[in-house]
Image: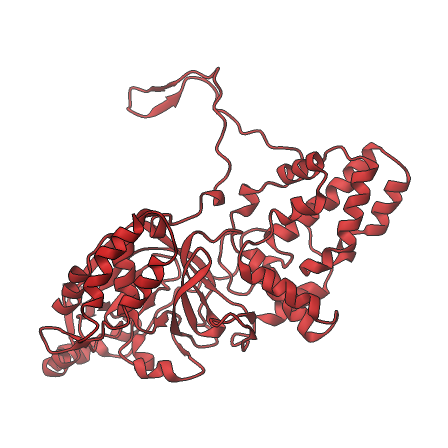
Length: 487
């Protein structure tokens, strides 16, 4: 049981709340705050420890499982040891995107289009006049085609977002909803139940912020700057998976905050430092955290080793190198590599989250913790520096990897590089909202630090684009992060 698990973990941490932990070199680790998130997590009412962090990704983000064909032969093994199918593979049935409509159902669709502005979409996109002309002509194959086409447009915009990929600057999230909630299946649901709007809303984002923005939209005067900003940020929620999962990390870059979230409720928040505007701006990602690294090392990029002459300096001044924790290795071909060992002066601080991705973006600690007190914190080369990083790391290691409090404290105090692997991957979302509820639950606007609003707003002023790509063709910028840039 989760409560039993936390009952085992929390007292060990609470018992340390009266004093700080001191490592073997005399460095201080503040443990007083670590007990609180565990106590909060204990109050979630989840039934088992595996529920809390074991379900890394929601199951409904995957395509529907294929039904088994009972007439198909079992798989057989070839002489090479590979599995072959003795008959043709089962093909999943996909509902057609043109289906039969009654006049009454088409009238209901027309009403939905008239009122779709409540979701921040634009009624004019769906040619209401053309639909009404077909309705007036009565039931026909043409009415079936025209009503189905407009409904599919609505599904695409509600499920995937109206903004085309060229309006989503540095947005690299692969949204699986088009596979999970296929347009034909949603159409079939709408026509079988008669609830056209209900079927559409079944693919709308589930996160509470979407509904909060919808409420805000109703209060804003159409055409105003605020109304347009709400529209844009509602659409950003549609770019993400409909269901973010039971537990995840999510950071809103312009807010400079990271949230540890369970069942869409904030359990703990951490201030962040994000990328500077320009080429090293933090991109928007949906990735998986596979573990935490305590007492990390930093392998210095060659742009610094060679480009800035750090390699030569480390080799030529051993005393200075030792004081900074650097070691250098020169290969037979003259190639010099430099690694900074674990310690308080390490550029990555005391922890980093192991989050492999093509952009080389991850969450980590920083020795320059004084910078978290600044209001504007777009200061890094792209990675996300995290306040109270060791608290976050130990909380996740305890709950997601089964580490005990004593083990976590001992590893940190040892000063030795240690990777703690999670039993299940945990989703982490790096998002960009310029209007959202803040960490106190209040609707707020945030500075558009990377000037990403204009492209979204322009897309809403332009005609709806059909046959939109699901994959961006924007350049992937691999961050060559220099954690020293804010030290």
